[in-house]
Length: 144
Image (tube, rainbow, N blue to C red; front, side):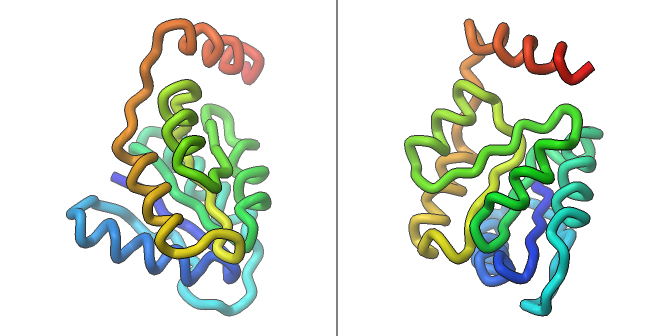
């Protein structure tokens, strides 16, 4: 199950992603924002990320104007590996190599079709483990 969140700058993109998830029968919960009215992204990004970190959701997807703000806020949550992604190669690599668990997208930066290709790639790609596991363990050790 996916946890979704956005600020006003990512609202339209989040709604497009919800349509994609509905069409593909992927369950999700929308944590807001629920309009293009100005809101502060940290609260929403941290809420989504905490839910993912607790294991209540498999992954999270966050959108803001650039994707930068939500990625910074999300990565403050212990156990989160949020990735700001703008292309399909990075979407695949961040899942395979970094086991990213939150995808961050910029609603004012990338187009609708590319965003959906990124989401599709990210959701369908699995972590390959191997030597990448050691690196993730090093990050987890630092978090403690």
